[in-house]
Length: 359
Length: 146
Ligand code: SF4
Ligand code: SF4
Image 1 (cartoon, each protein chain N blue to C red):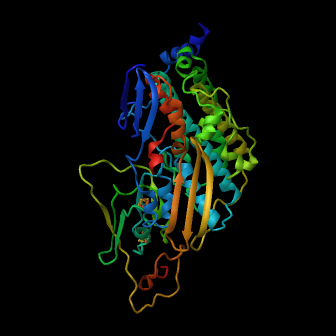
Image 2: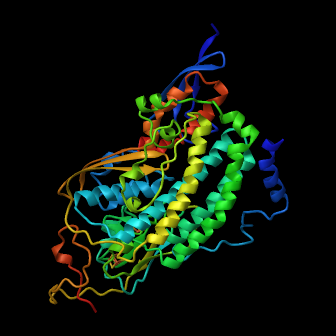
Image 3: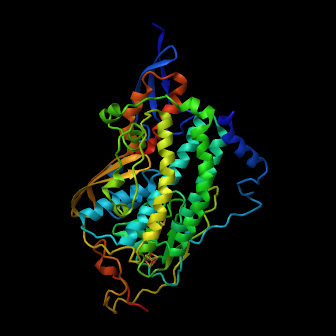
């Protein structure tokens, strides 16, 4: 038996700017177990509901995360719409779908960059982020913000995208698609990249279910699960196949996310082709009273919102279960038996967002 | 060898292409017109109703009815646009151009020329009150439209 030691990893670590702490039990270079601890940046989202009214909470909700901000705001609005029985106009649903997919695009490109950075391929990192920049420009042109969009409201969206703006976005995405294909083919085919990803961090389908993984983590283990198939927003009118992979390793997670990039572009195209001309929001009056549970598919996986309102302007409860939180048990599984040098990479493959996790 | 090729193409392209970044500060960036940079007020239309102050999530706005000033702490403002949406007179707007950095957090304040109606002129019809009243404020019903 080799020598056992415990190495503290994080909360400050160069590969991950966000604070998560792992106690790694090592035997020589091999990781036997990883014990995570979180709670370094808890922000007390729930207690804010007693200070901000339910309309102001839209803006608080979208600040849960800087990457999935759009969908956090949308998930919260959907929960309130459900409680208050508001019918959202179709155009707003389509606009939400388009913005959701743009979020997925930029989140996955960001992740690809971070992954490349994680295994030390700096120029690939720069290229992924260069491509992502154009998506952020589109966000800025359509919503006015690059990170926080503030376009969701209870009952619809606040800003419309005129049809020529949508056409222009599709044209830009067409242009980008080729470039993205070039860059992502390096992730999928390059020898050096493959040597870091293939057969690293195996998570079998059984384990993924047992550990309750979500999103690309789950789909890369061959399990077909995608909340978009529940048909929220306009997804029920969009034709798409859930992307899965049976390889179960880090390469599979990369492959699934790359597949989703092209899928998102396709969904945006379909949505732009089908978008109806209706109002973009309905007027909502009165106070919410009731309870609702909403699940949406964020770039990182399924997010869960539970809202309970009591008929006043302050909510009783607002609980969010973010995808990273659900993926931490799966992460500890993939870390068991890996090499010490692969730990940063494996932490990255769940696409961690620790700020989300701690709310 | 084929497995090394995917990146070779990109490398050659990089060698002969211009930088992807803008040469700031020599080339200024142009913001799209929707950019949420900072909150502007059209002070001639403001009626000092305080709706913006009550709705602002981080509490960045202060409306002083007695002193007739509208003040914003731009360092607290998160550019959410909720005040713009709530203002009954639509005198607020969000325009491009970010708050400039500075050594201290100064408040931006404007004197509002609005003359409140004389107490004799009873606050009659609730004109222009688009948003549902958030809190009971009987004495300060929005003034009749000019
Ligand atoms: S809501 Fe509009 S009118 Fe009322 S105080 Fe604020 S800026 Fe003035
Ligand atoms: S934009 Fe938002 S944060 Fe800024 S002053 Fe208006 S309500 Fe407050």
